[in-house]
Every structure is written in C-alpha cells, then in structure tokens.
Image (cartoon, rainbow, N blue to C red; front, side, top):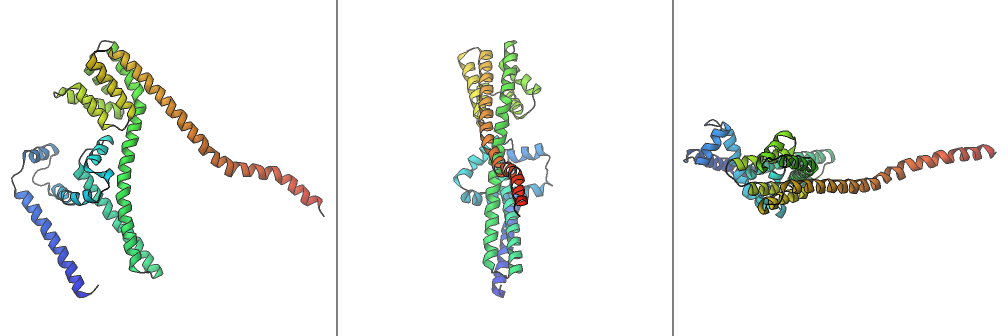
Length: 303
C-alpha cells in the first residue's frame, strides 16, 4: 500500500470514529424518553451503562445496512417472528448486533485462512479477498440458518408436549375449573416450552387482555401446526360455548394420532437410511467371509 493510500485509509478511519463519537454524545445529551428510563430502571442500568448503550448504538447504525443486504426471508418482521418462536427476546436490534459479531468473526477467519494460503503457497491477494468474502457470507447465512433451526426445534418440542398438556387441561376443566385457572394449573405443573408459553398466556390475561387474543398470540409465536390447531379449537369452543373438556380430549387424541403418524414416517425414513451401512459395510464382509474358505481351498488344491 502506497503512502497516499495509507494516509487516506487512516483519515477515513479517524473520520468514522469521530462521527460515531458525535452521534453517541448526542444520544447521551438528548432528553431521555420514558421508554429509555423504564428500560434502564428495569435492567438496573444507570448512567454508568455506557457499554450497553454503545453496543446498542452500533447495532442501530448497522441495522439499516444489514436489513438492506438481507434476503427476503430475513426481514425485520421475519426475524422478530423467528426470535419469538425460538423463545428469545424479540429484539431485532440485538439480533443485528449479533450479526455484526458473526460477520467480524467470518471476516477474521476468512482473512486469516487466505493469508496463510498466500504465505504458504505464494498466491495472490485475490485468494485473500475471495476467502474473506466467503467467510463473511458464510457467517451471515449460518447465523440466520441457526436461528431458523432453533425456532423449528422448539416448535417440534412443543408439538411433542401437546398431548400431555391437552389431557391435563381436559381433566382440570372437567373437574370444574374455569379455563384460565386450568391453564394456570397446567403451567405450574408441567415443565417445558409449552408450559412456559401457557404461563405467558395467563400473565397476559391477568394484566387485562382477552384469553382468546392471548391464545392466538401463542399460536403466532410457535412454529408448530399442532399447537395452532389446538389453540384454534380452544378459541372456537370458548366463543361458541361448546363443551371445552370434550374439545380438549379430542385435541389430545388428534395430537397423539399425529405423533404416531410422524413416528411412522420417521421410522420409514430411517429404514431407508439403515440400508446404507447394511449394503456397503455388513454385506461385503459377509460375502468375504462366505467366499474365503472356498477361495482358500482352491488355492491349496491347485499345485
């Protein structure tokens, strides 16, 4: 890198740092909003929480750039939905900040690998640039894919817990408890993600929300179709006045039948996968063991 180029790069870095410091100072001097004061009080962050504010500032600055570069499947609304489905705080700004961390990690790994290859094999700088870009893109896509996978796995676990929760709700309602009390009892009794979501539903209703709206919010937060059907059945029963205990028993039976179907489908897929070691590992060994005595006997009989 020549002298003027190095000087220009240094001036660009200094200018960027200066702009960030000015924006951070402006944010600290402006009149705090009620949301900011409540957030600082609830999280125990006072005037000394400069590090958290700085990180949030960085996230807010890079969020528009990452949003513009994101594919259609990673829009802010999609990210918020997947965060809630994964059981994480639905803070898109914090997720964008974690994306920045992943991008920096991919940049470091790709650049280091490219530099090692160039030094070891005397390659060109194109390899460093290509591997650095590949590391950044891979880190970005991997982090987004991990979030989607976490949301799907959580929805699957909630679907597996649904039959037990539905039967306990049916028993509680049949014993004479109102729907909200039954939900609260099951949330205290059962462990797991679905019980935690039911506890959130009870909390939403306690603060003045409608039980139907809270249940529909539960369905929107999950990635399980079985939970969605379960919530729809409860809401329809509450709105039309049909016997809730019978509806819950039917929902539990349907959930168990769906679980058996998924188990059979999984067993069918595993059966095909089990043929791979049988055909390529076990069967050749059996053939060798069966043919070895005959081949050995022929070699002994031939002078």
